[in-house]
Amino acid sequence: MQKDFLYPLFCIEASEAGQRLDQVLAARFGLVARELRRLVSEGRVRINGRALLVGAPRQEAGAAVEILGNNLDPALLAEDIPLPILYENERLLVINKPAKMAMYPGQKRPAGTVANALRGLGRPLSAGDGPLRPGIVHRLDAGTSGALLVAKDDDMHRQLVGLLSQHAIDRGYLAMVHGRPDWEQKECLAPLTSKRPGRKGMRVYAQGISAHTCLQVIARGESHSLIEARPQTGRTHQIRVHLAHLGFPLVGDTLYGGGQTAVYPAAKLGIDHPALHSQKLSCSSLDIDVSAPLPADLKQAISRAGLDRKSKLG
Image (cartoon, rainbow, N blue to C red):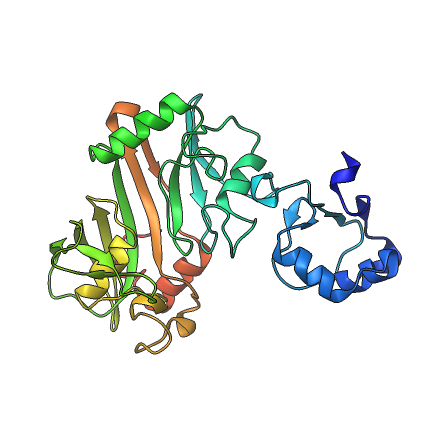
């Protein structure tokens, strides 16, 4: 197996502690910085079992370093990434996905994804959607945190896909938005399509694919509100686009108008990604009723906006 690594697995010595990784590798193996940048960009550098995805950080004594060779595909390997489990039985589990973590590897993200983290849990996983998506039944945007269903076998995978298509799995999202809606509840029935060629994202379009989101205001502050969103369909970026379409973009959502140029920008609230959290997931036929705790940065943003005092959030 050693042939699959460029260099032997090694640990940072006490004398190397505090040095940048490029300095350590140059001294040990003569590896030039340009080559290290290439290896990092391909997800081939692992520190303590987790892919290094940018830079050459200073190292602590005892850190385990391995560099994958060309015979190993980083996209298919397990990583030691913390992934809280909210619920588990013999056939499925529900994890609490961190914000800013991509679902599966791609051209710009060779490792460090939910797929790599799921393999690192050591559980059996379905293969229904191919080797890059082990166990993954549905997806959350990279910036979205919270409850995510995972199948352990192919039969359960197919069952979960069917239940999702039948709207038999109830999903509740907490969204922090700019503005103060003058309604308490609203159903948004706005068809979606891809943006024009060369532009990223989705847009409302009368001849697009049907999309349906149920919305309820939970709390209003001076310039922000909390909204519970329950998608009845599963279109890409559906909640984000629907809220922006109604004039209430998500805090931190630079793609759909809720970023740093908005009044009271996301940076002042301490959040640097779309403020959307998959908070509740339930299915009566599977006897599942799961709640995902708010991540620290979203909880802080809600507090800074004074919304925690106007809602029942813990």
